[in-house]
Length: 561
Image (cartoon, rainbow, N blue to C red):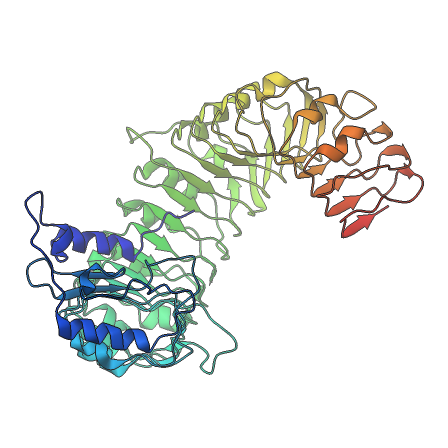
């Protein structure tokens, strides 16, 4: 969803503090910047060591290197202070090399070095980077460096941002980047942002020492680092030095057991991600005391206990913007937790995901309608019963509503048709009943996906206002024995499931004019030969019908008749 902060936030802070003076001199006259020849030659040597198949560095010609793309010079001295190879053209092929030319050492005033997203063929991070002591920003993420990170980086004492996160690539000589001892990191007293996600830290020493000796650290990401429960208990004892941490990402590790107690002391915490571990305690009530918390992700664990704690957090944490508790083992009834919201003048919640907790039951709470900024509401694959509350129709900012695979019954409230920002509506696999008319979709003009299959619904539409891309209406009654004529108006439809809908007769000729890629007409009474199919069709299911004759030549790759 793009909601967690990144190193880009710190870059903005650095720019606004005047580190890169060329862009911060104000409205006065800007002096002419002339490239320093020694630094220009250093950049050209660096360029010659690179393989640049798509000519991303084609601007690196001429006398003034300060005008080259990816290069920024300080306004008064003309020294190169920024080298950014990621911003040249993100869509172009990566720059490649198996050696980083040490000519970069000639850039003695370089403060910002960004090499992310390129291909360094699994070579080790150069030791000489540790001699570039003016650096404040170093980003080597996803650049296919391998092996052990050199402890010499600990000499770069001015470093504020260090991003080493990497995606695992199975065919490299080294499994991935590793750190065997965090002692050198503790020397980076100015460090504010550290991302080592994807690195193998399973045997790393002095992790606790590092965490408690970085007084400026505000963001720490160690996602997918093969960390285990012993480390969580013994290495994550955080003292008052760590109280400035605003973001902590320990997702996709092997933590098990109790919820980590040290989190209670992180009073400045805004982002906490412990998803994809095996934590199995009850919901910690002390999270209510973290009054700055904005994003909480505990998905894909084994949390147990009554959902009342989760409800209390929702109702009392005014700053919360996103909450993901999907794929756990919570139980109980959310609707019994509180009758009314209180304590917050305005709720900031934009995303709520409580899917795949099969023991959460009872009615959908009516107080959900009070989260007026909510954009994404996922309550699927639980055991909710009863009717859909009318109050959901007041969530005017809602873009996605997914409450499929529950035990909801009754009719679909007409108020849902007022959600003018809704793009995805999935009510499938419930026990909903009644007749849906155009009034149920009155203001859903930008709806893209509609899933109402596996219910007891009758669809009686004449001219719905939407142009959907995906329509799942299996097992729906359609008020006619033939194909509904309103479907001819759906010019963007590429996935259509209308199985078990008691449709009879032949396929209409207008069907081949639709941009369909997936079509499921199974378990109906469709008869006769098929003369023509949409040329875009990729998957076709006509099983359990009365089709006769061969299928026409088509690009269909999967077909069941």
